[in-house]
Length: 274
Length: 288
Image (cartoon, rainbow over all chains, first blue to last red; front, side, top):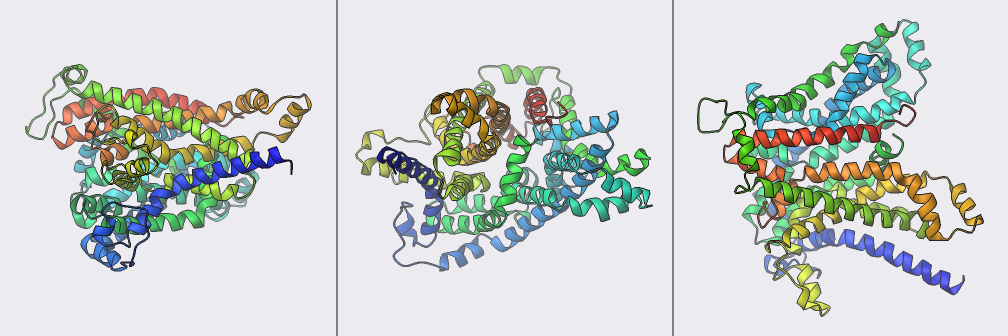
């Protein structure tokens, strides 16, 4: 290769790996410090631990009530996601297929939710009246509601790209609308439903503000709130805080590694294809 | 046949959940914003525009919170777009090997809880033992060390910096998809016409990427105006970093529901106006 070109390629490669490194440093810090003793971790330094303290993880699981918090997070993210994806798919399907004026208004109203902010204060009033404050069912319904706008938006665009003959044929053959949807359309929607599902699980898992407003009992707290509380209690002990963080982000990182394709396509689909 | 094949009640579940938990609270806000609703009195009274007067009174901290929110939003939008565009171009045309890996790594901070990112940066930005100041000292730039999270005036920029670091990968992924959608032939034609790299960027890349940049800008604006987690964890809204949502939470915790609702409602109106921009930008091309 020409020397100037080789030099240019080297500079570009170094910049790309440099950017990746900057993205990784904080996670590296968390992982190494999670295995240190408290004095070793006091400065949250980059050195490797002298003697890996695997027991830190046991300590935080006990002290931070992480098993309950983990199960709560699983219940909220799966419950909210399944509900949101199901109702969004049903809605997006009819709204995309049968474009009456009324349906267009419903669609615009639903996707407006991508932009409008939540009024947490009056939402508290709604939660009180419906007896959903400090309740797990309440969190699931609330989270489902927050994931509907973007899911409807993505699924609507996908339904739009499918040939109409699919569902029309099934309907003419005598399938009821419900049967047509669940046995013919739903299976074809799988790719976009997986994308919506993964994005929604991650959003709910990472969310922090809803439980802060609407959950009082520690026994119903999700991982994020448990970590925040743990950080407040053990602020000076970075080894335990790091171990707690590792356990919180590990599931997210695993989902990210497995489902990266769907996450990245979902994130860009809205903006580029749409 | 159509209306029987696609019954409107299919949209009922989504409408019900969305209506009760998203639309209804926003509509109720228009009523409660004009009351003295609070945690200490049993009855609620109509107070007209008092809450709005409280918000607009410069001796309270509401106006400065709005100012911080606007600064945060504009700064993160510009910084994220600039870095994301540079990285997107680097990873689509500069670097061939490992480009997928780099893209995955730069996006990583955006999939993790903001809360966790904030906690980690509380340690990195610690003035005495944090990684940033010790690195600066190590490379002989000790003069640049700062009290990043307590120095009024500087702290908002530290929060902006951390949030840019966290959010740049998200914008980059969208821009990469946008860049890859530009047909190669345009660049070939440009180079046959003797265009330099910079000219090709100016006359091919930018105009064709414009719609995508519009979308990322709107997404950045919407995120910035709503920011809460990052500020709450890094500074709890102190040292000149309070934002609309941290101050709403603050008022809510102090039981001042009327003022908190009035602020939320003002904010709602601003966002609805902006949201028409989103819908226009995101509407499928063939319909528009």
